[in-house]
Amino acid sequence: MFEPLVVAVWAMLPAYVPNNAAVVLGGGRPIDGGRVWNGARLLGAGKTWRGTVGGILVGMLLAVGLNAARPVAVGAFGEIVPAFSATAVVALPTGAMAGDVAASFLKRRAGHNRGESVPVLDQLDFVVGALALVAVAAPSWFLATFTPVVIAVVVVITPLLHVGTNAAAYGLGLKSEPW
Ligand code: CTP
Ligand code: MG
Image (cartoon, rainbow, N blue to C red):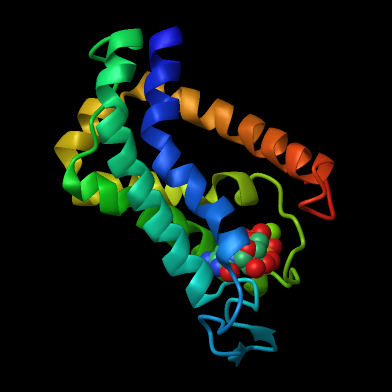
């Protein structure tokens, strides 16, 4: 179980970090430009250009940084540590942000206000988005990296990491709710 855990965490870091970066960088003009559809915002004020583009750029920088640090990780864990292909560098953070935006679209259609938590959807939207985009954009890299066991580990650890980082951010006074 240890090797799939190493691969899962390393390969998903460029998909995890954009959401957190968006919270820090977000603000300004909303993507939906304030548009309302069937009585609810198209996406909501929580999806901004700055947060989305900033989150994607931070995720891409992280993937490039992980590639640079890979020799160190290979020394510790062996050749199992994946290198990000150029397409994966772009697709993982872009897919993660797209999944988050798509989830807001669904939440508004279902009548949930901005910031209202929808368990499971909130924790896995960016995972589904990142995996789906990278599977389409870089299929051979996807298949070599995300074996069924690695995907299973991702599905289990992501909600745990999400709950853990949110609780930590609450403890540090960065967030007003612990979820
Ligand atoms: N954020 C952003 N752009 C994004 C994602 C997030 O600017 N694409 C910023 C916003 O300030 C947002 C905060 O990060 O309020 C938290 O993100 P998230 O929890 O995804 O948004 P919510 O405000 O909860 O809105 P929603 O209900 O639509 O998820
Ligand atoms: Mg939210």
